[in-house]
Image (tube, rainbow, N blue to C red; front, top):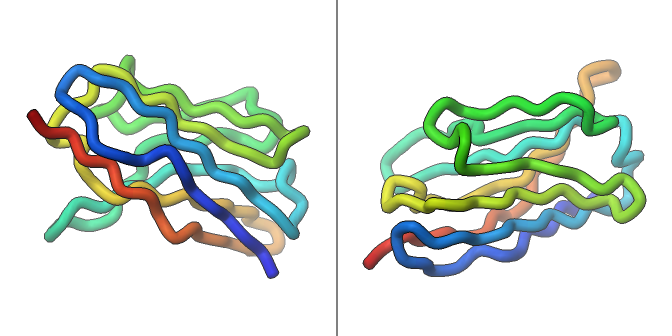
Amino acid sequence: QVQLVESGGGSVQPGGSLRLSCAASRFTFRRYVMSWYRQAPGKERELVADITGTGDKTNYADSVKGRFTISRDNTKNAVYLQMNSLKPEDTAMYYCNALRRLPLSEFWGQGTQVTVSS
């Protein structure tokens, strides 16, 4: 059974940093675009960042550009999100997503909570 397991969430003060990890198993990891999404209470889930299968291209939401960095290690079947200069508005459940378009195949992790508060 396909698994995406997030870790690294927690509580941090504004201005702090966290590094999220997502461990993938039981699918051909390198063929999937990997993304981080987040969902705050009462809000829709939104794309935070994504990275191509080879890791050569990344994309970020405007709200996190310059503060967050997505990366992947295809030898470890893992994707990461380094989050710096965290703000209270970054508080959300963060989800790992794997997507392959042809043929369509998509998986989600269970999420890891990030709370930014003083």
